Length: 266
Image 1 (cartoon, rainbow, N blue to C red):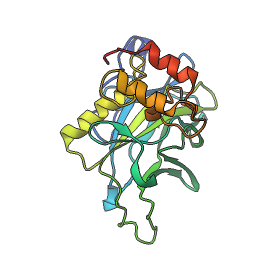
Image 2: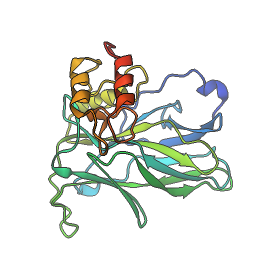
Image 3: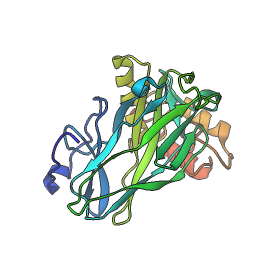
Image 4: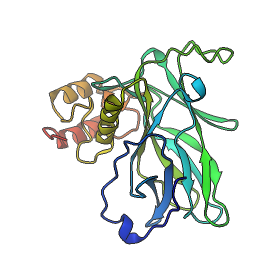
């Protein structure tokens, strides 16, 4: 945690989400109107996209960044997470399911939840408790694994280049869950390419453009075609397949939402 967190209502209300281009910042947690909110570690402003990079300690696919921190939770508050959508990979042009059934393990102690390209919404677990003064600082581990991953040889892990996108919400035993946010994990992109991946991740979360399935900055025929191709899928659907509401299927609710924003430039 880089700074002491001091919040006022005026500092949160009506403020646009801050850019998250700096890597390895913590996800700061605070409470506004009885709901958890996620804040940028540098600006202390609301943020919904956080950056990280895989390969920590020289181990391909591994990192324990970002961490989670706060000094303004309720004493004893228990914090956890849920995975809100399937794992995505930014391939330089589009968000796609990771190839070859690559997966991302989210772990703390003996607890693990695994996200992959068709896992959809998943219940996570509690992983931290605020101190009597409301403070908290801890780390989950994030580990992207190739299907041939063998823990006896973790340095053989030929996962895809690009940026993996994990979509989450923070949960609490005392307050409402946070809005959805994204952690974007760089795996071999240049700084300029990774900045583009971070910017495109914002479009996944933007309420003004929820139908941009292919991440090209507009809701158009290619998005509609993708949804209609998968229309009627009853389980395991991803955002890129047309599952706009994150319930794992592609149905009339998803089509209606896309058509509401059809023609929108994000």
